[in-house]
Image 1 (cartoon, one colour):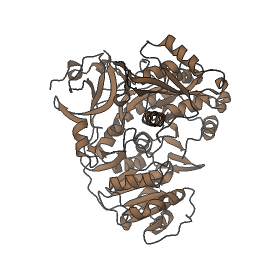
Image 2 (cartoon, helix red, strand yellow):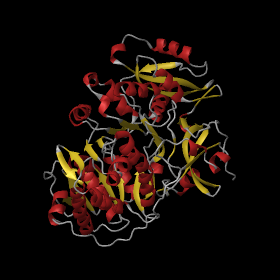
Image 3 (cartoon, helix red, strand yellow):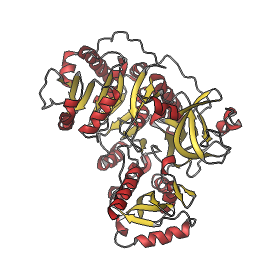
Image 4 (cartoon, one colour):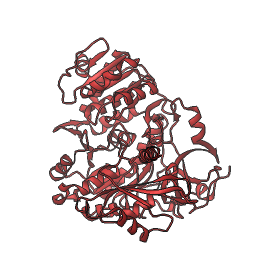
Length: 560
């Protein structure tokens, strides 16, 4: 298949933000274990992690990691074994992550919000035979323990104490392993093939069906770290003009947190205040007392911070660089953040399947409302139709990506892999499942998920476009729009809305509909509005439109 001229001669090459280049050198022989060692060598005595008031230098984290890696080898963990990490953000997560990778084993990290049944699904699907789990999840772990074929389970108390659960031949305490390995003695040489060996099996958010495991190689993740490092180094030297000090609240079980916080830190020498949960009180306290200059997050985090009663007296100006990912930031909210902090938001686009970064639009870039920026270095993007034909600039279709950060494939899902990959112009392309368009400067505008597109009387309606308009209404704090099946219209348009406190019981659903009618084309405005107290979200903070559609389908069944 012939590639369009805008890919052969990338149109974004002349419009990339300062500090970013079209291509970068990517080593093919570097593993994530090598990255971690480089961090200790380059930044040994600098503080890497601050957790519960205690500071850990890069060298201290490295020494703890090597001790634990030796302990894992003694437990029987071998190269290519899968180790499941079921921990919140904490030093033990970083230690477990790099220890596993340093001995050539594979990580699969489990959401701290999961219950036993969900944990068991991921453990079984990934083939994990070892689990590292926080002691407070033991009750959920016990519910599923009998259906798992595990060799060993390591129990962690993140406060440093001894877990209440007694040790057995299959259950061992983290402290016991560390006591048995008091010195960071060198690890045996384990040959890792960065391009072929799976570093992480990252499970998708499960917004459509059961979660799938994306197999990410060492090369995939190291490439993405280097792509992001290019942004970080420029930011550090020319934008912040000081070392990077971050509030670390992205969930580390997700690849966004793993790559952009855990794995990037050894490359750039950054210091992170690590929070195990999204604790707004603690975030405002750190902002006030420690003056961090960066924070990565998802839209709901920043919306919650802006709408918190604590925001009234808070000074947001220390956060010179914030970057939003996982889903699009409402334009009005991004403007409000800039007004409160004095700094524009950065925005990026990525997927679990791309390690995760694809595009970036840092605060110093040329801004276009609704755009997630231009492709990262060594990354190609295109827009295709249903017949896998590339579309011209400006036309909407499915976004496809090719680059060194694109996954090897879905774990044990050969049929899925046939659906998401295709070859064109000598490149291997990943279908993202996102509707998007590309402008004449290579800026990408994500319109919506392909599966979320609403068909109203034959018209294609993008939920995100309606949501952006709803966010302009002063009463709307959060919203989500879905299509509801209708025998005549195909789908009807419904908006779920969380009202701001001061508007509750002072505005009606019909008033929102009437206002929308004035601000949207006749085929786009919501015909139905429901005020709700909360919206269903994935553990990374994405609103689950799938759950809202299921809710509507159940309502219709009951009414028949």
